[in-house]
Image (cartoon, rainbow, N blue to C red; front, top):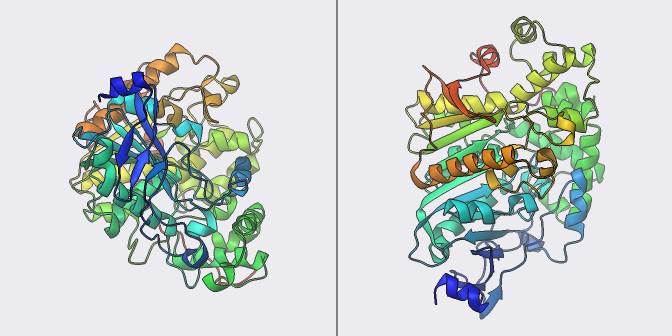
Length: 517
């Protein structure tokens, strides 16, 4: 029976995966399968272990509901979502396919959500893949991975970067199963934003991810990568909140919600560790990929400089006003003082003269603009740009964009802030938290820009060309997405010049482990 006939008859799509048969639903002409396990639940004896292959099942498994979120930090009330979950089948994938069946051979887009490696789940409405899949003629996959201490806590008796290992396991599931859903396992693109963009960058550097994707889209790459000593010190502080030592043996008996709450407690007072943890203490970033082991031997920037991504087509970019979202969340819009700007420049600007170079390069900037510029550059903009620079310099293919369209929602004060690209890329302009940035309607300008971005991402997934020239270190051509998109030289030249002679480092432990500020 054809898809159209199936829809008219009310029948539901079924596919045979490697583990068993799945029955999904059909929504707007797209077949949808939710909550498919790609690994065994990482609980009990498997807690803090690398993901294990999922066992098969007999009969037909219903695949109409998202799997439960993994344990979450408390930001935006996400911890309540995980506490309410009745089961621990955290490691699940979801698939949207316009043409399920082994012969379709469609390009595959695999989404990695953000959330500072602390929160996030694939079941959020802003990540619904229906519109991107249906209009782009691509298969869209989203999935959960462990976050916070469960996924990125660094302690004795557990492998590092378990959240990244979950991502590799999800990509292995795609390799082994996506043909049955109409996807081409030899034409897989990973894409992600914020911590998801950082994860995409990490996957480029991970030997275990080699061969699992041929293209990558890194949106607003979170540039924090930790040295083992720093990650271990943070895990020790979190464990101390519970009166425990930072070992898998001691922590495995702690309820996941208590473990997440311990991380939140340390994050709330992270400034007291500033002399030991450095810049991350100022932004309460407690979890990030750990560099130095077999799973992640180098930073993404070093790996690309060494040619690791030469055979991977890369699309990378950022928003113009990344920090504005965080300034608003901090309650500082219109309130940043000269002292706060000076502190931000001292902490985040590169090199001994970085702060002065920002002031000299932006002579008309007030405290708030300087505060937002240096925070945006340190956290997202320069890590994203440097990924492109290293890819180009090593002979790889890369396309670069900047989202400059000012969000009209929330009184029009948010600019092109962090996260604005997510509803535009997925086309979910009226659902989920980021939709508030778009505003009611949504306005025709947002629909038009979203259509351009969705078409670019789908074209890149199909054949590696989003529709504008590749980036090189000569012309530095960039697609600027605005009300009237234009291709021009990289627009953040002042920041680029300030950062051009500085590496994106592995963040170290600055003081003695176990000391107290």
